[in-house]
Length: 346
Image 1: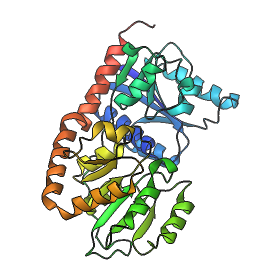
Image 2: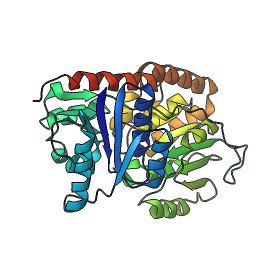
Image 3: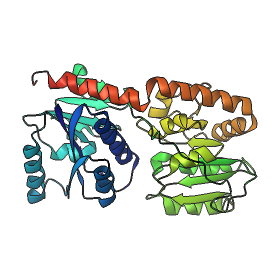
Image 4: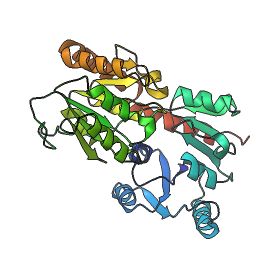
């Protein structure tokens, strides 16, 4: 079997971190690889991987100046003796040198490429990120496009009156890190012209205080529920009427795949990722970034037209099954690893 080390030095919570677990578990279950996960010491993630019988070891990943910590990680990596090492995001990529293995850096956003130049191969989760890599000087024949798949676990909808929500009103959902890049301030402004609608906003982050103040200043306190970080976003999608992705910058927008897989119509901005994968009027509705009026009008159009909603949901689900399902993406990674394992080093 090909031996693959999966290396993540990410945060306790986050979309990339969630997908790391999904992919590693999916590859393990598929059974064509021998894997080990090298991750930061987050007990919950370590426990989740161990429960799925994935070999895993935790490290501080404190940075390049933490010599002892980095030495411990590199010693464990050497002892595993992988054929391939795939690093996720800046810190893990910057701390992992070239070695006797094939080094793959996986990018989920338009990151500064200084952390990635030493790799042998690169995976971009969108075509735009792949172009970013090539334009940044990476050889095009060593850059591969492999997107994300959704959490396909069956879930039950929540009660529509959860979080003290009037159950007879239309219900919107937005989810993600509360960061300026996510554009949740624009969504709150759009809410002022969508009367009698409730918004569930799931997530945490540095903009939480500012967003709550904006919500209050706009007079939306009675119509917006700040849910904090949630591990049940797919269940929330099964509950609501429309999912909104108002991002200013979004590498892929894996949340798009979540909405498709769980049959929740989506209205998104044409930021990098969603603008690439959504076909406007077929698999979702797209609006320009930072356009409050068009965002509110598009949300209202989906809420008012059940036939449109059903059409969007059906087309998006079929598109997901064909191009982004777990089975499709796991197969792409297995083929990719098998291909590069047999190649000479560059």
